[in-house]
Length: 439
Image 1 (tube, rainbow, N blue to C red):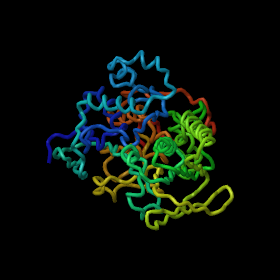
Image 2: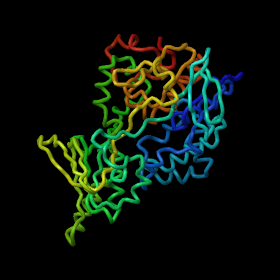
Image 3: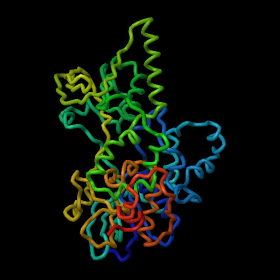
Image 4: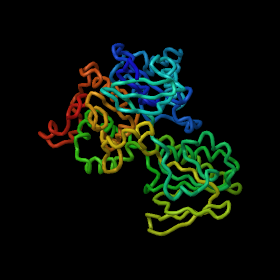
């Protein structure tokens, strides 16, 4: 039992809990501490491939949207590193992912509320607070913030395949350099799949690349102005108040607003393939086949070879491919962290197995309302496609900070949206104000 109880303990230090820590750094009256089992900050190290770029604006950093004078902004990072003018002169269409990762690491090294090398092992509900066992000792906290991220999603048909013949895109940076397989299939038509195909084109030992996607084509991220209205607090507020069946329908329809391929990446790939055809005129071309609208239904291993069976949605036929290695750019899925298993029976889940989140991003559970469990990156179907993205990280952190304080420390007032989403007269009844607890 501890005599000192924190206002908030954070489990996991990824970009979202890092954003929360940066925002709370401006509120000294709150006692907070964040824990991470890794020895230092790392952001998707497995996908730090050469030339990889961000898909969001630098202004959508950890703090700027609600706290523009914070010392932890991306602009403050550039000034601190004497790169402000050179960054502007470079005129990036999109920021290199490695530079944004370096910015995140700079913030992590500067915040005193972070504890690396000390993961959260167990959480139990006590009398008015949470009793938490960490690698750094036992602590108490009135509230929790869970930001441990999702785990790589592997399709059911890939489960029986050996790790020596398959790997997830989250391991790409470590595994691609060792690929010796002549025939490689990349499964997944999003940004990660495109970046992996681009990297494989540079490997001489790879002679055939098959890029396979369930989508009807290799489609670009929709980053046009009206679509970007989906990444605003005003839209998220209205989305959260919808019935679950409508929210699920909308997230399915909006996939290309959050999970398409950057237009610059598609253009780069197309040009590389065109240039390969020019080279092929003077000699044999290494093969590459682009196969959209294919749904892989089975994978069977016969010796070193893997046979993939796919349904082609264009002509409704069945295809088979023989490959030597498979890269799964198949996204991530939510799993309740082990340290919350003691509370598992007290947490309310949706029909699709995700936690039900109130408007302030706290999950529904049967404990005291004063003891909240905020869950980050688990609200795609409760708050919309922007929730797992960096776009609204600073705003969400401000919502949580206001909830902890019980007052509007951060001004979260917004202009009316440019797009009228809801039926006039219905909006006030949809949801509580984002930043106040849902009853």
